[in-house]
Amino acid sequence: QLSLGLAREGIQIISGMAIGIDGISQMSALKAGGRSFAVLGSGVDVCYPKCNRGLYDLLLKNGGVISEYMPGTRPASYNFPRRNRLISALCDVLIVIEARLRSGTFITVDFALEQGKEIMALPGRVTDPLSVGCNALIGQGAHPVQCVQDVMDILETVHVEKRDKPKRILKKIKGPSVQGKPDVIPALTGDEA
Image (cartoon, rainbow, N blue to C red; front, side, top):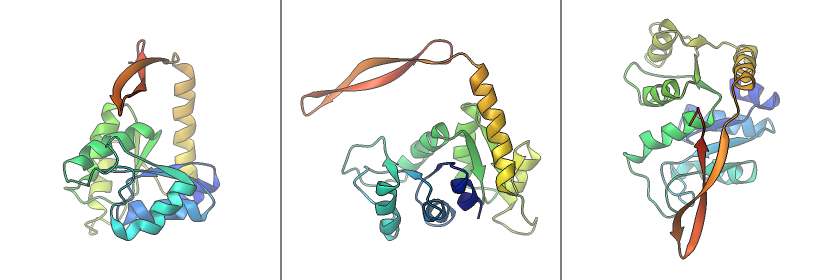
């Protein structure tokens, strides 16, 4: 319900297209007429997991599929923590809906904290193993999220803070060439780089 409501407010959903809450939230956003982006732990031309092929195809039409891996790169377990770094980097606010106490979600949370992102978590029953991690995050200072307005309030705060910071300067640098064509890679310069 949360991603459906956020999509209706014009908020884009960024996730990893994984089975479960990732895929559900992305599909809900698309069904609401919103946009969603998947960051993959494989090349952009490799749909993983394969059972999310329908979601993958919809994302290509109504958002996008993003990867730092070369086309054709197969998914590998060590690719996913790096992928999570990009998910958190692209988000204004990281929202955790489900998390066991020992969950890969905390990799994304750690990256988000290093990047200065706001963290929100859905509180749940203390006896529910999928809520233990969320409740722990709230206990450590994450903002509780119970409705769309909670997220909108935090996003407003984030956008005010961004507006008050000095702008980052993008500078183009030449990157490695692929098949003889040089890539242009944006690089950050200035105080925030």
